[in-house]
Image 1: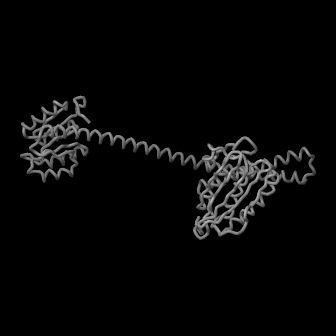
Image 2: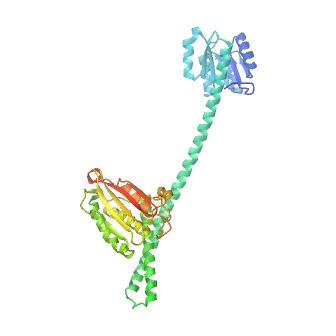
Length: 392
């Protein structure tokens, strides 16, 4: 940085040689610096304590005192003081000791005035940069503190949200169970036969109650996952046996929608270390998702393939597909969008978020590929038994 008169940095020259003082003072004043002068360290300390300057230029030796002691006292007065030291060649060993005090430069005597002026300009620039850097550090520290407070507040709000969701889900499930029980009794003639219209209404109540229960259980499971309260109960599991069970359970729903649901290659595979109930939940969620967006006459196929470290499971449908701009949001919580205009019911956007968290809890990964109007394939992996058994 070119130092000019517009900067007007203030200097203090501590030098008992009046000729040297005069040379320095005139040369630096011509460059626009404001110069103060002291003939000895004591006067220099008094002047600095009354009016701190940007830079101190001092000799290392004085008749009645030591420049080292002056530096020590100056640093006690202001740890950030900027100093240039002048030293006779015979005093260089002593001058090198000044490095411990963080001096900005060391100028040997004899010297050239241009050398001194250049050293002063560089020292002033260095001090300015250090001060700016310190301001940035302080601002950064303040910002980090604010971000930390905001993070803790958000964390507390997120905890309250999770607790609220858990509480409200439990509170709603109890009366919902009563509604479902009473509706079941109505549909099965416990209070007498219903006429067709009443039976239709009762059937609608039952369907919506089932859907509401599914939503509440999704919220409950997701809240447990978010709070870290869900623990996997691992055991050796044959993935194909679990797939077969879930496919059988969901076959009536698929048939009612005229969708062909099947398991490919159901032969036994190497065992995985998994929570059987959660693996069933993963598969059921993926099949339910496929059923929502696959039109009548479509197909849903499940397959599992053995790999050296894991079993890879695919759930493939011939549904409406997912638009490319939505693929990266498919596992986000509370995210809802239509794959494309067509058949499909909306939940609250938690099913696939739950699936992803459960797969990751097992030590696996999940991905999705899709083409609009052609279908979607979900692929997830579960580590084999010997690599993960016993972990949670």
